[in-house]
Length: 160
Picture 1 (cartoon, one colour):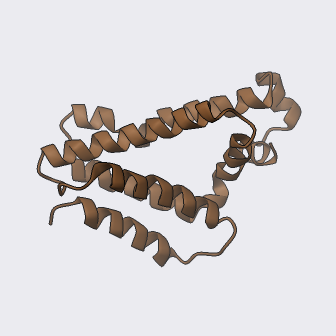
Picture 2 (cartoon, rainbow, N blue to C red; picture 1 turned 90 degrees about the horizontal axis):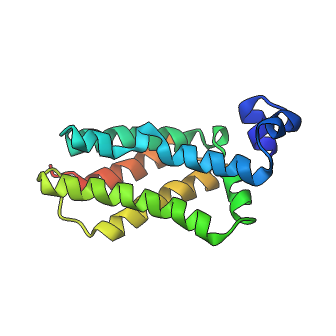
């Protein structure tokens, strides 16, 4: 809760005046994260946007979040995940898997992405990204680490 209070500039009492419980606070954060426009590829795909452009925008956002992990609520979310049902966190993860799988299929169908093993690259994207966000809160990481991860993902996907 300390991270949330710092991120919002609200006291615990202020938070609880809007939410009935800690669970409600985290549920709202999870829902908002799932709906984040920056990582909602569906609109861009429906508009016929280049898969590479969508990917580049997402990777830029991911790089920024990895580099500024202290500004994220990832540690608070991890603490919450330890107290809630697996179903809720699994649902959150499945939404992320589906978004990335859909983007990769879209890129392959447009001949912009290599014909990769979709589940494999989605696992790399999601687990490395989340792992770096968590680990970088503990260990100082130079920007080259974030660049190498983003570049690796891009090289695996984008046809050159």
